Length: 235
Image (tube, rainbow, N blue to C red; front, side, top):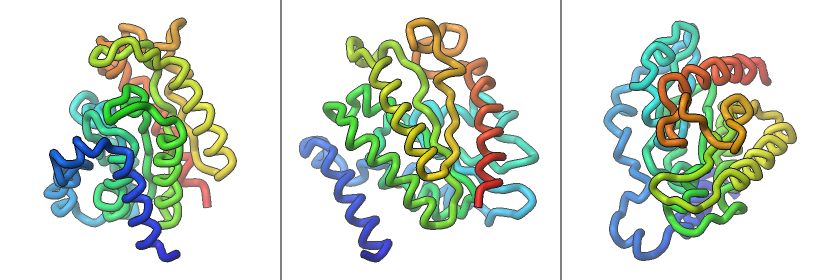
């Protein structure tokens, strides 16, 4: 099967994860238009400052504004492509325009927390895992080095209380870590560094238990930078 046919099949699979009622409400479920102008205006990457695209949800979406110093790095050109509220199927659909078309050296994928929060329907661990790993394999097929990021700790969701996410996050991270090792991808473990005794995010790192404060991002930044250095050394 050609790459284009494979991508189309994956896109159709991701679309099937969305309830039909929601699909009928919008033809841009994945919000492909969010970064379209910025992507068109982005200059070509340079060899001296390797381009690193961050694919994610609200945690990635807020990062560039919360920690401008990190994104002003002289070593790497970090580009944030997070969209608040998105699930893994939406990110899979965005992979081409928001990552691959930008010709990065590295992509850092942080996805899964909104799947667990059931933002787009009941949580399906298999679907989430395969959406994330499909992004990784598609990036690899285009010569992009892959970083799989652990899902951040979460004890509860302010907007969807009672989902008991902590063990689900741990289970997904275990699978992602094993998959990264098997496929020789870099794995960045935010969870171990940031989790409190409840396997959630402490107030010092996230006011609402989910979205990092500046202190949280400053803990994540060095971990990602180390991961980027590791990814760039891989062949």
